[in-house]
Length: 288
Image 1 (tube, rainbow, N blue to C red):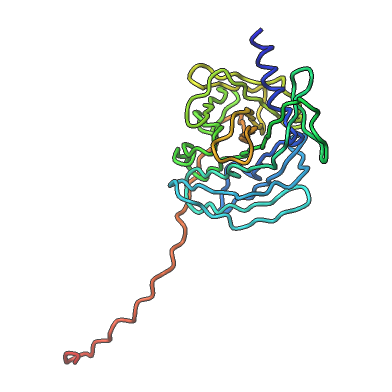
Image 2 (cartoon, rainbow, N blue to C red):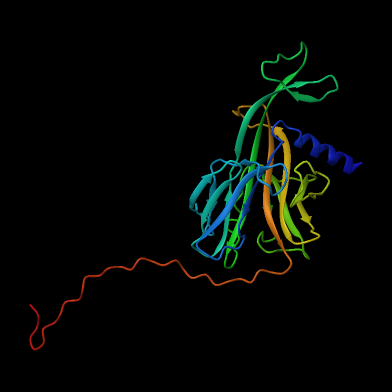
């Protein structure tokens, strides 16, 4: 019975009008060795095949918890190419932040469900209506050299996936422990869907459920890149454009067969200070 209820929750959350695509961020390398890292941002119906370029107000959090630098943004037809500056050792967070979608009017159906009201359509007499807005967050972590926790513990959005395991040291043999938060509080009994490469985003049969503490442990059958997705509908905060918001939060992770060999990172080159040449002292008598 519990699995049936969870499946119903997944279907309801994924049935929003904008659920035809799921956003993700995919780095060229989760462990960049140089001072920059390339990341692809896209919406997809199948992972990791880009369908629609993912835009928005991208944010970088550096290993010190400060705003990092996004030095390149190139929007293509089906993906956005990003360049993240990674000058220092540590873990960086790249995220879209909360992206607000358009507001959709929903109308109740005789069987107690809801459907989007078509453009120019008038709701049937006596039918209830409501408004819905999508809120999406896509994130990924990059580590250069030795990892640290500062950016990892930086929460983004109402519905947040917070890694307990280091997000760039996930081993297939150990799994990945993650915490789900809503409004900063542990979110128990909620499904987190696990997608692997080539999975359609409509594939909802592989998931883990958070415990009473909001924690869940994801296990993996093989190394590779995965997307974790949490979805939930809730009443929107006061002042929002819609009455109800449909949240989708994704985190792209890399699962390894063995721990990554940590590399030493040279500090970024500092510009040399230019001092005036020293005075030349004359031999045999003091300078004036």
